[in-house]
Image (cartoon, rainbow, N blue to C red):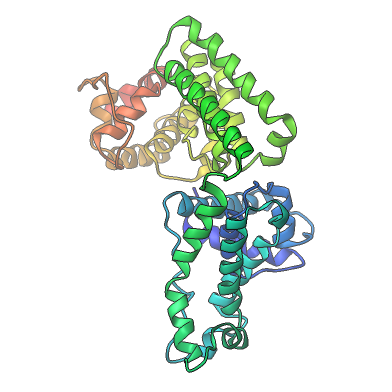
Length: 410
């Protein structure tokens, strides 16, 4: 996971490579605007629409795309948590009203981005309620695009247009939330749509029942059932859909069950001794969702260590560049394997012990972890170690001769 600053810098640098060179606030507004579309806009379509034709792709291209995916995920997370507040810089100053609405200012840029994304919506397929809500929101967003636009939109008989604009600015997030609900979540009104909705509910209920079984049962029959459901979901989605949305799979609501089932499939493959197949499955999941919201990188790094695939271990550590217990332990063990009891390995061992005062005692068996664990944890607490152990952490250290003995040394 990139830091917020690094993500922002990479997105800005990528924007500068293309023809359109959008402002960062424009990009944020655009990505949030995509969520208003009742139909999912595929990544390749909106990437080109937002940034234009790109220049020559350098070695940082994948890093840029990763940053854009992460920013998209941030906007989607806002929608899912109903946190639709505008960026803090998108202000409408009372003392300097006209300056706030200059073209280069954050508020007009953000609104402009959202308006551009709204243009991708096929208005002919909207219900009456959707059209009304979208028109109202478009009216407000346009009103904040410039001082002249504000005067045209908010100037009423006997009223100060600037005060009216301030009033509508305060209610903008409410209008946005209402529009989002009507566009994406409100039940369809026609009889045909109601029938389709009922069919979808039935299918969803069946899928949830199957998921309840395969996620909580380790019997041999579960693997066959699981693989059948995954194949069925892939057939429903179609290869073109999978190809077009590779990179943003976790952010599409219809793909979350599929991703969850495939992660469970990897776990069962590992439990059945099919180590390389489990590795391949997790690597494919990370390809579908480079931001790895599911945290598939954690079992993957341990599986790679067990398989002694040291080059891929280093690549995964460098890719995510984080100080999580999993990655810090992997780096420590990798250095011990490649260089033995060296200064650098001991430096990372010290950092590992400092990051979790419980790690050494549980990994070496001085303390025994409970069977039932909670995967929710804070860095450094016991649950983090329990989660690490549940993903074959102890087996990883035992697979390297002398590693546990070396870990206990000061």
